[in-house]
Amino acid sequence: MISIPHKAKQFLVLLVKLLIVGGAFYFIYNQLANNDKLDWNKFIVLFRKNQSVLGIAFILLLSVLNRYFEILKWQNLAKLIHEISVYEATKQVLAALTAGIFTPNGVGEYAGKALYYPKSDAKKVVFLNLICNGIQMILTVIFGIFGLLYFNAQYNVITSKAVAILFGGFVVVLIVLFSLKKIKIKGYSIEKLIHKINEIPKAIHQKNILLGILRYLVFSHQYYFLFLAFDVDLPYLVLMSAVTSVYFLASSLPTFQFLDFAVKGSVAIYFFGILGVNEWIVVFISTLMWFLNVVLPVVLGSYFVLNFKTKTAE
Image (cartoon, rainbow, N blue to C red; front, side, top):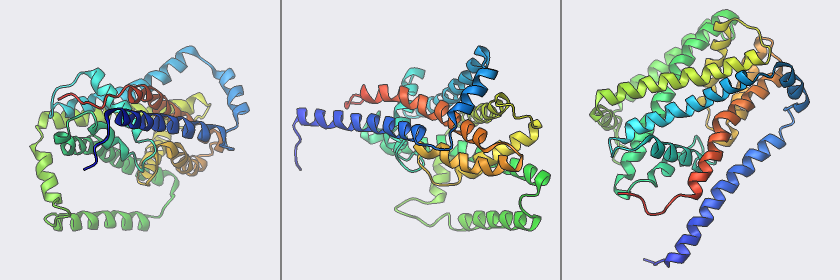
């Protein structure tokens, strides 16, 4: 085995840190500067018309709460390894978000968190992060299905036959997964995964679900309030059903964190186009959501990435 000198190792770690942070900022700048659908002049006019210190503070507060509930979720699950403070959970969540910005569906986030723990706990960290993200995805699907059904009932986007086929396909997938639960892939099976999930105390699961619901309500309503700020006047249930449908369908598509707003924006343009909302407003709100909930946390996470110590605490 080749031994790398300590100074060379330090240099490589520094180089990786700079590449992660530099790459993150490059992609953020590239997406904001080269998006020809963003009409900054229209945005400035509307912003000056509706600008409110309290309104801006409220939207920013929702972004803080969105990430704060995610941090509390991770702190709640991480105590199965060892107790960590809110600050330590914040450091791990934001650094992992920054590290995962280039990877499909934020896969790099799993490795980012694992680096803060001893190698012996790496598999457990990945599993707990899967639980942390998994409950959010399940909630997105549940809220999204109800939202999509309500939206479809109002605007008949897809036929009843198509809904029945989709629902039938979903049931078939569940039956197949249940029947194949004992089949192992690289030593893992659905049955084993369910068993490991059941080993986690119910109190932790319950808190995880509650925090996940609170987080979902925060970021979905942030989307809603931004539409109100852009003078979009639609009934609450109609607007929220469109928002939940967008999150559901966009989350089903494989993507990168730095392209998140583009994917959600494309899906949102379709749904809100049916509601008669101008395309540039939809694009701007999707971009603002991405900026507030991904870009700002990544900027903060960059600080933790640059200050990451290779020697993890036992």
